[in-house]
Image (cartoon, rainbow, N blue to C red; front, top):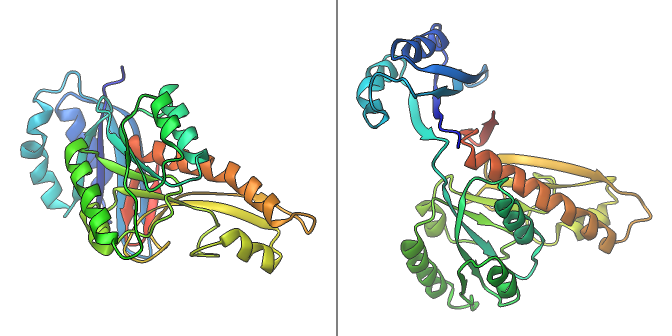
Length: 283
């Protein structure tokens, strides 16, 4: 199993940052495997992902904060350290549509997604047989119109029990409350069935059909308190024509949805996403 360390950094853009980080890894006997950086001229922000082999490091990674904090303070860095050997825990929320769920579970079982799936939550019983096939706990939490807070309290209890690192909304057709979103900042990934920012909200394929678009798309993004407006992780499009019905758009769109969502989840799991403002850099 790959056992590298991944350092993710964002800070004001200044000279010497790349050299300083490389020197830090070198001085402590690490070996850089991959290094990617991006300087955003508009915001004056520098973002970097450094993956290195810590096998011969001259201190334990548990003490990384002690050694790296003085360097980070010099450049006003926000940073976090991850390890590729850690498999984050992903809870999946789903409603009736199962295509994204099935795709995620297949990719997980095949080893493409290096994470654990301890829990599937749904507001409908339809996908229970899929969860049982993959031997993953399935929890049905119905969401009555006037009892949304009660349903979320049940979900909080489940999340406390199963302790996921992040949540994926695999066509979960419920709008989360601001309180829920605030509990998991940048840890809820959604798939929206349009090329955002076009056609936000409900029935985007019908909106697209009415506008006579020539391309439809899918967007995976982090969930924020504003509907369908969170930082975008992944997108893709497919061409459609005047001959396509709404049903054709939905069929073509479903193929996009599952691919785009799985790409976004993989990028998140592999610690390749850095959020700044309402944007992301995906290394």
